[in-house]
Length: 347
Ligand code: SF4
Image (cartoon, rainbow, N blue to C red; front, top):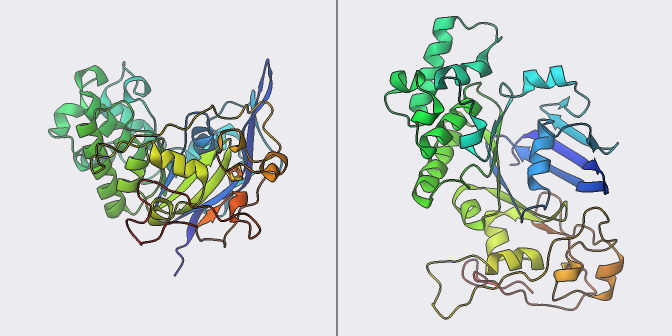
């Protein structure tokens, strides 16, 4: 049975006016987020994943940024694109939480931890001062911060990097939002702390049933955490499916390129990592055809001329690549994982 959607994004386009022209950062992106699931968005820097996430909370400055006229972001039946800044303030934190990339710069260095978490609940009806404080202490404990009463009164500089990120998670969750957006929340942390933060997010998602959008460039992190994945490239979603579909039945050459560039402990020493040659497309003047054509070893004539449609059934494994056309040559996409689980290599 399909779960209810908590968020529906349709035909999302977001661009920026710059001195050099208009940068089309997000180009006609549609997806939904289901109640209680973890959706991963993966891709290289500049592929549009963070701008997409920030569009949901209207965090991109307008101007110079602007939405395309058909863009729609619907949260529990409410359109967000047309909301004013004041209306969005009631959504941020309370309805949709955001965990920023770098806790070192995202926390206010002049404010005590407890006060920063309380800010989210400010102006909310029905909470006395005492209740707000109790809620903050409880969330600090939930995110694994020991001696919450002491930490409540401390400043960010008194905490380690991992603890600061836990505070950021507490800020995102204290309002009990329906969605939390985590934008590369573990990038600035070392691997052991990263693992504990990922475990924490998964545990909190199970306890609180919050839907999470997790942005990363790391497919390993996606495998550990997510239910479904969207791979973005050149401002578009080029492949989407469950984690298992994307990892063991990779259909898009760009996803295959990402898979083959991950270092894995279980690989034989003789297996060489393969970088994706070339650079992402210029989003001032995006190519007419497939955005990956200039870097794709399978590119055909049509790829340069015409944008591929998204092949595959709605709500199933889908891929934006001409290789999926019935008239295309049958190509075997090989990745480090193809054929290992679920058995078959994609043809
Ligand atoms: Fe490569 Fe063509 Fe598929 Fe684009 S559409 S990924 S260029 S084969």
